[in-house]
Length: 165
Image: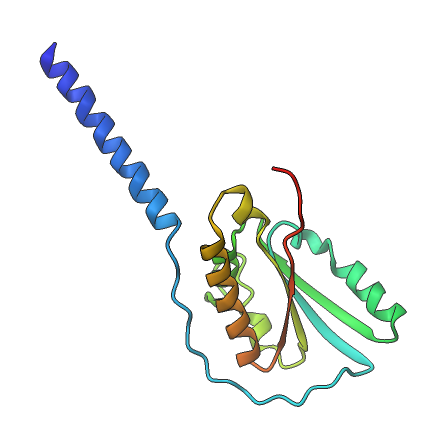
């Protein structure tokens, strides 16, 4: 009986250790990649290209038509392209922006596209749902903000809306 209780205790401690290790790893910060800045002199043109990256709000081109229509109503034709990953927290959105294009949900191609003028970033809802914390969110959003203009593209951030969870 003592051996059985000892074995159960050992399994519990190992399981708890694994859970703690996962939570610590999952809540850790990625380091921001240093990218050489490109000088830009862009002005709003009659026709622009906008990329939208982020979480499930961006998947299946949910925002593409609304952005395009709104821009057209304001006198600017906009081509909109998007890439979103359901459930992505800000760290994953940053990883998708900088990961190899063969990686699922990678949107690195947008950084190489010389025709893209703006990248709209939609992220943060999943950070709040998963209680990731404001420091983690702020850190990875800052990484995104530093990466996009380094390629001569203007970032546009969508603020996390107030909602009840």
